[in-house]
Amino acid sequence: MTTNTISLTPRRERGWRMGLANMLGKENTAWWRTRRWWIQCLVALFFLNLLAALNLTIGGVYNAVNNGFLFIAGAVAPIAVIIIGSDALLGEKHSGTAAWVLSKPLRRPAYILAKLIAHGTGFLATWVVLPGALAYLEFAILGKLYLPMAGFAGMLGLMFLNLLFYLALALMLATLFQERGPVLGIALMAAWIYMITPLGVALADVMPWRLLLPLGRNGALQSLGNALLWGDPLPTVAPIIATVLWCVLFTGVAIWRTCREDF
Figure 1 (cartoon, helix red, strand yellow):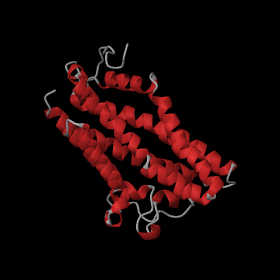
Figure 2 (cartoon, one colour):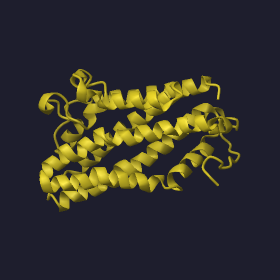
Figure 3 (tube, rainbow, N blue to C red):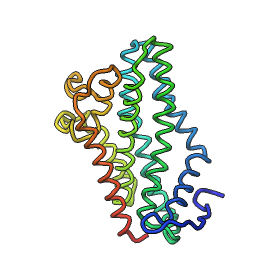
Figure 4 (cartoon, one colour):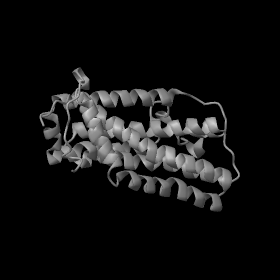
């Protein structure tokens, strides 16, 4: 039985939650009973941990932490989230699965929330918790660098919030466009535009870039993740608040658009 033909069983949910448990079961099956979870683990371990280990031997421990682990977590990890997150909706819309699923006792807000919860949990496990725990051991054993555990855990929280932003953005764009081109193009531009324009500094407090990445010339604006790792006080909490609000807005728009779309 494939994830697209999994049976939906009766539940007691009412209102906007109707069908949420069934959809969560379907989406979790797509993550944990297929190859997706271990493929994502391997990709995350390669980019975040293997490259960090190489940086340890070539550039030293501080370079491995700042220019290796944090940079990849902030600039590369969102690619996987954007691709998988957008395909979670577009793939079902193009195949007709979305229309079939929504013909069942399933409310459309539950349809979107199930995808956000299941994919968010999947990325938390494969791109944050597993590589984060291994990176801490790498820095301690190979680099003899014992980072404060509370600060490191806070940095992992920022990693997840950063990924959640791009997941919610990809889901929202997938409800607004029918093709992958605009969805991927807009989402990737949102992830990388700070590199090619002066917008990085101008929008530092209202975008998620500064959660993990330094901005400005020569990294004049310290990233929040860097501050937590080294035990420094947070220079600002504005990017954290703004990112949370963006996630709520993107999710709200995705639900609104899905409720008005004719599948």
